[in-house]
Picture 1: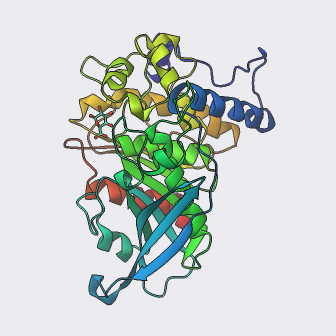
Picture 2 (picture 1 turned 90 degrees about the vertical axis):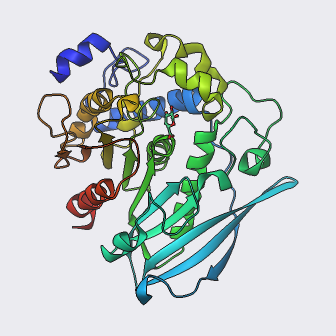
Length: 361
Ligand code: GTR
């Protein structure tokens, strides 16, 4: 079924090189990988700002989580040219942790805990967390003068200038830089996670930064995990997402959005950039807007890249998703729970099980 559905959608061939040859081994894929990275940055998300080392201040918060954990507020101040901006983050880890696996979690709110972030349960499973509120990086609107958008503003936006998703991903990468300085974290076992627009961001983060061992993309849908060709009737299309949220993307995306068959990529390329590392694509049964079939098909289409590395990618029955699916035996995982569009505790449990199966062991 996957192959028949994918054939109808006629996605760009991940292995077809610009010079007409085909990728047949890992070395050739590394070159092709760099090609897809540029294609996505130039045409969809926009290029990253330069890496700036922020000044960091740390405040330890009062004892929380029944004394089981340490919670620090870590502020990153980015200075570039005449401008600077401070982003607060929250670092929480099991007391006494050394070399613990970690989640970098992009969230909608700064709250600890938060309805999308069951902090105590994550800690009890042995993970640390570094999280920030995305709007503390830059606002979720078309204003490119505030936060890191303002710090890195280049005057008039160009065709390939960063959209907001790229800036949120940039901050997640700086979180990884910081974790490299902390003995509480094992930098080889860090995952990035987010929901919806921040699930799109979690995929882009790991696609661009190979230090992340895993990416968990919850209900990310259009311009995230879901392929854009052949969106289901009640699913979000590239046209609609660009009409509502043009600032999430680079201006050049507009050229293609009315007709996704003109896109020089599809979203399976975003997943493929993360291979052979671990990916978890989370779907929710009632979340038709995120197009669950298109998210699973995207996994099926990207899976051969994992196989090139001699690792199983997607291991799933050859049918469309059903409630209760949890296909995490391969490194490219997919699950679908009951209910609507949100980051549930059930999703977290799947992602932690996936980490334990493939990374923590
Ligand atoms: C919706 C948008 C989706 C998704 C969602 C969210 O309005 O259409 O692509 O990103 O927002 O972030 O909650």
